[in-house]
Amino acid sequence: MSFFIENWILIAVAFSAGALLVWPAVSAGGRAGSLNTVQAVQLMNRDKAVVVDVRDAAEFAAGHVIGAKNLPLAELEAKLPGAVKNKATPLILVCANGATSNRGVATAKKLGYENAHSLTGGMGAWRSASLPVEKA
Image (cartoon, rainbow, N blue to C red; front, side, top):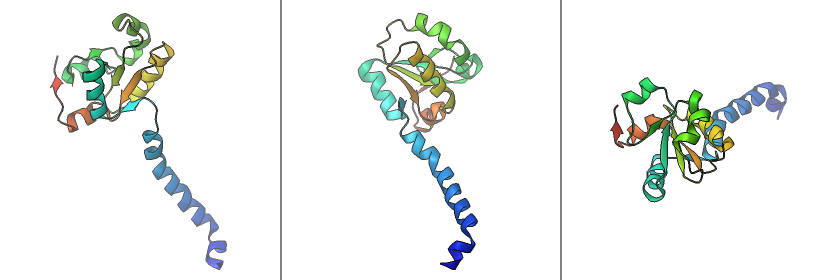
């Protein structure tokens, strides 16, 4: 018992470090609007989801999901209403690793696209799953 009393700072640091290591996995798993590659393909096939790639034009040209529309994140708010007129259409936003597309989901939902999702892991996860990629 004296060990815990004398070293309470070390124990607190260890618990804090453990919590910080676990937090990304916990928060990503519960993030609303995120899809894995299997869920994304199912949404594309069953519900005719529109794939929106929010990377810049050069990254998009290097390889993207087949049939994806390129709307860079900086232009998303201005161009999304023209590209996808029906706000009930499911959207799958894709970026390089999943972080930028989460911001795109927030923008899409602000515009009224309530069925907007982010591809967890982005194009990296898409390629890892050996899914088809198109080059422009």
